[in-house]
Image (cartoon, rainbow, N blue to C red; front, side, top):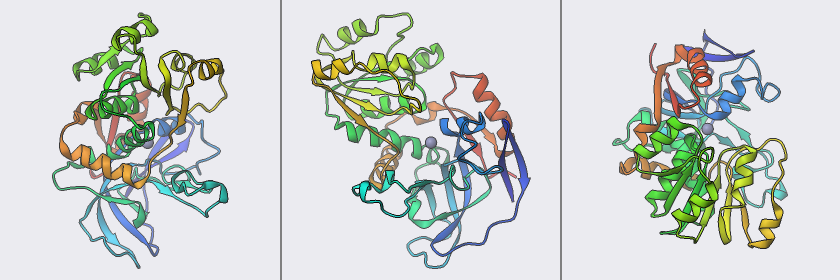
Length: 339
Ligand SMILES: [Zn+2]
């Protein structure tokens, strides 16, 4: 079978590899599509070479059909269509406080272990979520990022008619905006990339470009002076961190979605002055996957429009180069079913 291996130095290579024997509790997936995540791009850039094991197959946004069922697996059959929740909880740490999805000893499948950018992939059966027949396998590959959005919105305790500002219109920011709107919130998306702004506008979202417009004044107008009930920081840059404390109402919530690997200055005075709340939100729990699948299957979200390109697995290298060259792109999918 074919696998796309990250070999370091901004390089992916297609290699012919042997299928691994199935362990107890595992299933062998025939991978349909694997989406490229921002994390995969970080790996491509060499930023995570200490964490991955080069050469390694990466990728964790997968839709698939079950090709083989390993020992001790019940509930699943060959041919079942699935999405993968790529979390392998390790030993429970007392500080985990029941949060298995962010446990201290968690391994992220596709980063800490082999990922889905290959034709066949062995995963633990506990990671699987069933996809309904009505949902295409292409949209099935969007379930993982959509589950991130569902988790972020659940932790925000978003209510109908609330005002939401999403800072950053990449794939996750766009999905948060779409899910928040679907749940009855009034959403404003802040983004500096004009192509992404155009896409958001074409999907009927209100937008603001903080490079050319006054962000605080725009939020004031958008909310009739009430300001944002919830702000999602999805940009990962200092300007987003600066903006996030300026936009909420009194006792408004800020949800930290972006990964900020380095400490950044935060206007703590605003937390005191307006009694703001900051909520961290990372990955997802099983119920977020189930909600994402139901939402995707409902057909109520314009999910097709966030797919920028679908390319065969063998074009993996070109796809990562294209992502670097086209910052306006959103979601790229690798078709792993083609020979
Ligand atoms: Zn991802």
